[in-house]
Image 1 (spheres, rainbow, N blue to C red):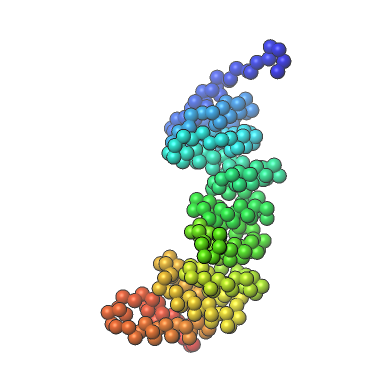
Image 2: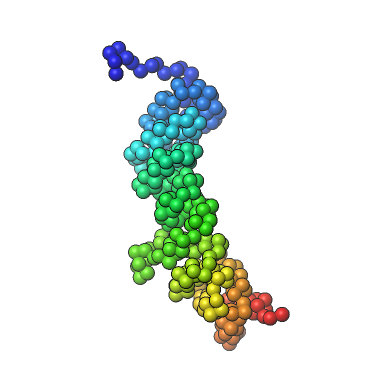
Amino acid sequence: MASGAHNPEPDPEVTRLVRALQSLVDGESAIDELVACGPPAVPALREFLLNGRISSVPQPRMWAAEALARLEARDVLIEYLEAPDRATDAQLSFGEDAVRNTAARHLGRWHDEHTFAVLLRLCERRLLPGVIEALAGFERAAAMPCLDRALEDDFCRTPAEEGLRRMGPAARGHLVFSAISALPDAEKETPSSLGRRRRAAAMLADMGVDARDWGELRRLLDEQDPELLVSAAHIATACAGPEDRAAAAAVLVGKLGAVPWHAQEDAEAALLALAPESIPAIQAELSRRAARPPLVRASDEVLRMLLRLAGAAAPK
C-alpha cells in the first residue's frame, strides 16, 4: 500500500443498515436498502458475515449473505464458506449451519467452472444441504458422486434426490451401481449405506430401467431388507421376464410381515402389477396364514392384505 494510503471511512448509512440487520423486526427490510447502496456496502457486510458475533439466532447473518449475493459479491461468499468454523458449541454450530446453507444456496446463482469447483471442495469437506442444493443445480455428471454420498445424510437427502431426478436417464447408471453397493460390505453394511441404497432403488423404481439394468439389479432379490425388496419388485414389473417376475413376487410375499407401514401400499401395488406371476405366491401364503387359529387370523394384517390381493389379482 502506498505511503499515506488508508482505508476509507465506512459510510454511516451502510453502518446503520448493517446494524439494522441485527433486528428481527427491521432486519429483512434492510436488505433492499443495503443492495441499493451498491458496492460500498460490501466491505461492511463482509465484516459482519465473516467476523460478526455468532449467535444461535442466525437470521441477521443469513440476511447479510443474501445482500452480498444480490450485490454480486461472490468472492465474499466463497471466503466465508471456506473459512474455518468459529462456532464453539452445538447450539451455535446449528445456527451457523443455517448461515452457511444460505450462503451456499445463493452461491448457486453463479453457474461457472470456478463456482462448481468450490462447491465440490465444500462437499468433500462436509455435507451441507445448501451446498448439495447448489451443486445439484448444475446438473452435471461430475457432481453425481457427491449427490450419491449425500443420499446417506438425512439432512441432505432431499436436495440430492431432487438433483439426481432432474438428471433423469443420465443418472440411472450411477443409481444402479449405488443401489447394489453395500458399504463397507454386505456383511457389515452401515445404516447410512442401507439408507442410500433404499433411496437409490426407490428412485430407479420411479424412473424405470431397461432389461440391461435389471441384469444388475436382479441381485436385489437376494436382499433381506424389505424396503429394498419392495423397490426391486416395482422395478421388475417394468423390465423383468416371467421367471424373475415370479421370483420378485415370491420374495416380497415372504417379507410382507416385515414391510414398514409407510411402504405397505407400495408393496401391495407391486404385487398387483406383477400379476399373473404373483398369484401362486399370494395364494400359497394366503393358505398358510388362513390355517392359523382364529385369534391369530383376527389380528393378521398381512392376511387381510393377501385377501385383497387375491381378489384384485384374480383373472376376471
